[in-house]
Length: 161
Image 1: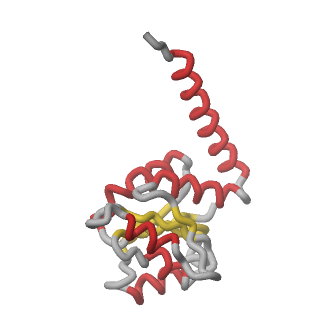
Image 2 (image 1 turned 30 degrees about the horizontal axis):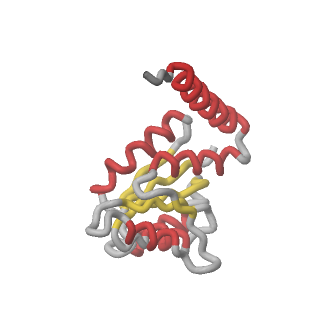
Image 3 (image 1 turned 90 degrees about the horizontal axis):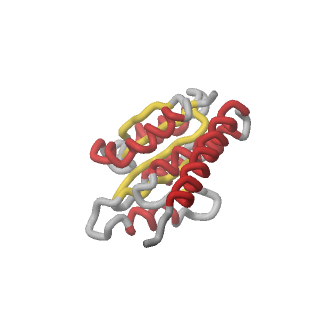
């Protein structure tokens, strides 16, 4: 199975990425986490992205706040899927990061999840990898089945007084 790269623009983004990494572990997806900045370490970020496929990665997840150029900077250097996580953390409550991540120019796609939506980034990465991995597809189906059962239990327990 190919690995997932979880890249954060700053180590202060680590708490936002915890649900992502927890979900990857739960689904038994190998991953590496790194700190690269589109602005402070542009050469290192570009080199990582350019070598990602050769280094066994299948999907890159990039979390950044404010100007949030990390996902786009990585996408410019690889043809692997890149998933952007806009991080809340500025005076604009993450809207600036959301717009910076989602508004990519034509020909340079970045899939974007909700502000601080790292668990969904992990699930999207899993779905991408599961296209070629039946065992992972089965684990995703089990997770979906568990979610369905939990909602149905809540429905059955609902009482309106």
